[in-house]
Length: 123
Image 1 (cartoon, one colour):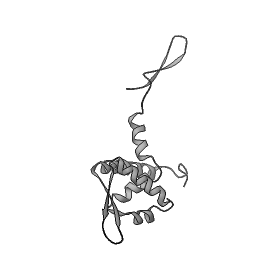
Image 2 (cartoon, rainbow, N blue to C red):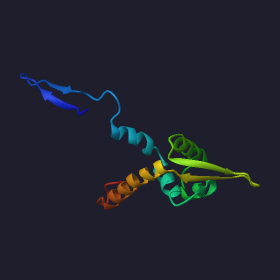
Image 3 (cartoon, rainbow, N blue to C red):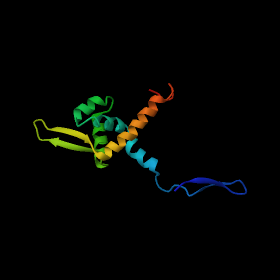
Image 4 (cartoon, helix red, strand yellow):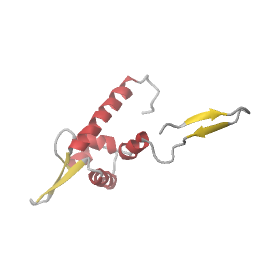
């Protein structure tokens, strides 16, 4: 459904067919827009990655935050979690086919952000 603004004969503006539920962009941003989510997916895309290696790759994120984001991505089906019964126990994360579709979006976002003029995005 497309939302648009109409203007009546008295110049009053009204929204015709307003969005009453999240649009497709909002739904996607609710998944990919979380802090560290894109970075985690990007690093997992290179192959199965152990938790501690991910924590090293995503400097600045606490292990609690990484755990939270990984659980979220797993519940959404973008990554899988594999526990190896070794001593010590090893936990690896891998991208799923659904997650691979998100990587295409992240790659486009990367290309776009690299093309932005200097100063548009604060470092």
